[in-house]
Image (cartoon, rainbow, N blue to C red; front, top):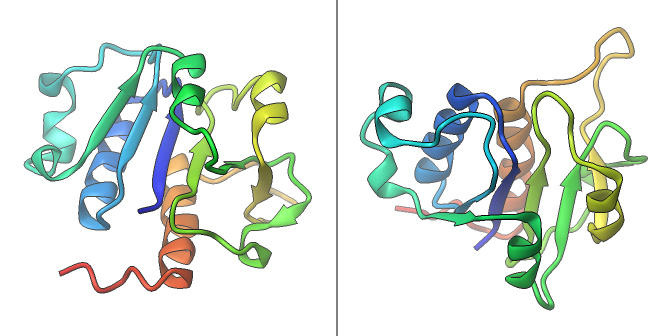
Amino acid sequence: MINIALFQPDIPQNTAATIRLCACLNSTLEIIEPCGFQFDEKRLKSIYMDYYKNCKIIRHQSFDDFIKTKENKRIILLTTKAKKNYYNFDFKKDDTILFGRESAGVPDSVHKIANTRLKIPISKNTRSLNVVTSISIVLSEALRQNNYYNIE
């Protein structure tokens, strides 16, 4: 299954909304710590409601720990700095789609490790989309390409 990874998320509401999204679309969520907030059920529960129990969540203590689990698997980084559009990319069933920190994206060292960097084209008058909106757009395309919409 296609995984979603959040690099050191710093907005708890976005992380909780991502939990809910991944639960609804049967995608595993990987959290690369440290988070910019205390990651606990009580803090996030009002947003993800009862979806937490339906979402497979893997927590990594560091980016190095995350990388160790990705041997022979592609890491697809979504970034405003990419040249290639997400809809021109062929997603595979075991890809991990990585999203950066809301406040700062990812460091250059993470850019270098990613197998591919993709972007969502947006208006030139704007900077970026909300991370959960971006995840929704790209995950939907990846699932469509791999015929994963029979999730019932």
